[in-house]
Image (tube, rainbow, N blue to C red; front, side, top):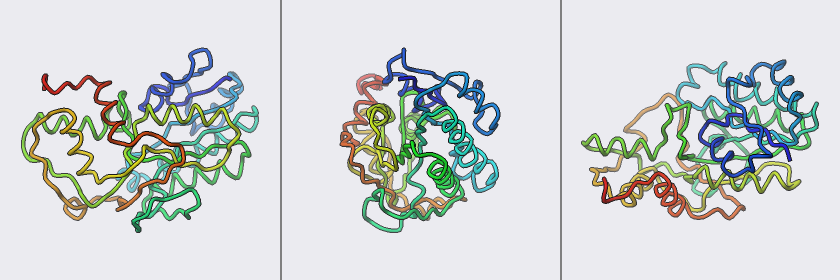
Length: 283
């Protein structure tokens, strides 16, 4: 199976390249394909003739999306539209990575695929628009919503870092670390997500899927577990979302109900830390 990975040098893309057999991969970076250019996108897919296209490219600086709405729509919606049209032309299935931000977060029950989206940010709206483009253009599509991603490669859109690395860096700098305790998520290790994606694309279970590590926590609880597992002594204190006003609305509860049976987030975090070789006695 020829599998095109768009954003192969990114956080999720790097783990996809670890999971998918090398002989099946067509790894592409932003230098090799610009999904906002429809002619280029079609030409690249025709050149490689993939059976599956996994798109990890996105504009996901959530607050910046509020100031750059057209750019958010160009990448997250129009870009998916271009890929969907190109995939249809070459007969490929499309995997489009979406987000928990398509939901309002105004409840305390995990969101399933059957729940009606109600985004409250430009980012969430742009990602939902991308979902609709994939759905109306293609029959062979996998829309995969996930949440709170972190991976060894780090997020390119966030300077090559992620929440885990950000917490460790702050702790090493010293001082008080205040983290919100009233916003709940399903932190997800990109290696686990990559494994689930690879299994999914080998089926014909087309449609919308939620894939996230099991369980949920607040960002404060996530940070506390990071310091516990690394053995780092940090002055961690609870805060509320109201303490840190942001341009973009943050869902208070965007936990995803996933049927894929990924390990609990605490075990996934430990595996990540082991992979990064954060050994407490060396801290």
